[in-house]
Length: 128
Image (cartoon, rainbow, N blue to C red; front, top):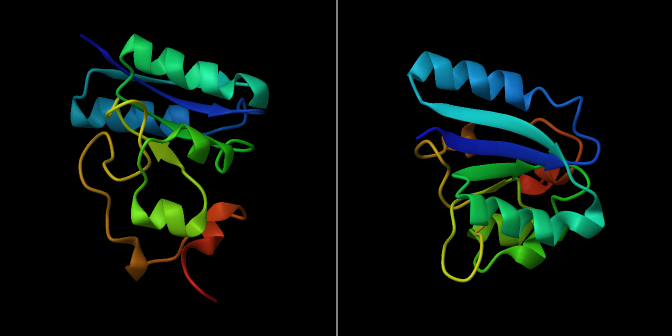
């Protein structure tokens, strides 16, 4: 069965994630789809519950949801708690989704050794 991944945001049409992830899935031979989903802020809790009900393997969140989605996590990776934002949520864990402790396709590279791009919560990762 094809795995479902997506990015939630408002706006989200500009996101390059679906094209990048679709290409990565194809190169890795992963049977998965990655879709952009416009979700209004007031609909975020319902959208997250819906993705879990559908069996989505994981999803990313972009503006304006990176900080608000913290309220929907039943547990957080220490880094997410420290910076006050979540970028990626994995499969259902306990009573609800979790923060970025376990990425969908394997371990996350050790990012302390490289730059962090972005103008939002990602900048809070390391002191300047």
